[in-house]
Amino acid sequence: MLLARALTLGGLVAVALAFTPACSGDDDDDAGPDDSAADAEWVTTTDAASGISFELPEQVEPQTEQIPAPNGDTLTATIYFVEVGDTGGVSAAVYTVPSGTQSFDLNGSVEGTAQSIGGSVTSTTDATIDERAALEADIAFTQNGVEGRDVVAVVVVDDTYVLQLQSLGEADADTIDTLFQRLVAGVALP
Image (cartoon, rainbow, N blue to C red; front, side):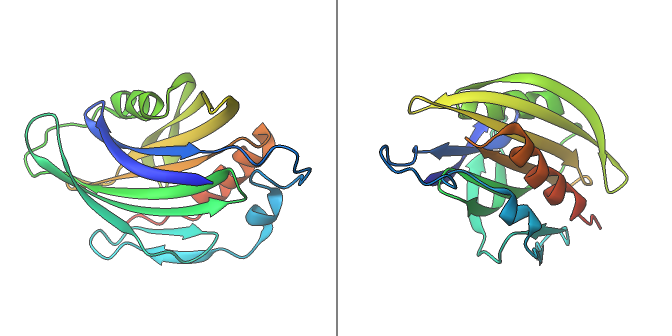
């Protein structure tokens, strides 16, 4: 089972995702995320406040949290999370940042995400999401004795919104990448 919560780390909020391994003794080969989620028809979701649209494997109700920022301000995190298999998931999180914030530390955000799941960043790559500069990262982690992988992308949408996309789980690297590429491809920024 995958659980999601938001943490303030690295100057931005990191969506902390934790999973419990599939029951031992269960030979169910689809315990982790599988390609069927990437192949299925995804639904478009539009965040009401920001106008950011993205596709997810299914329609979900967002979780909204007010989170104290390191400088004393409050960030609003709107998190859209879909569990994929027993031990995987994808998420899109829209962060509303306080006015007057001068810049965003994308590297700090990625490091904060890694810290929040007890992992380490194994690589980062400059990327583009819907024609905006972004940072993608690969994070390795171990939870409950099971190795996992998290692929994260963070993009500054404008002076008010930051979007963070994640695909993670204990599945093979190709499955995590396939889900992540599908998530990124479905983004439309205002």
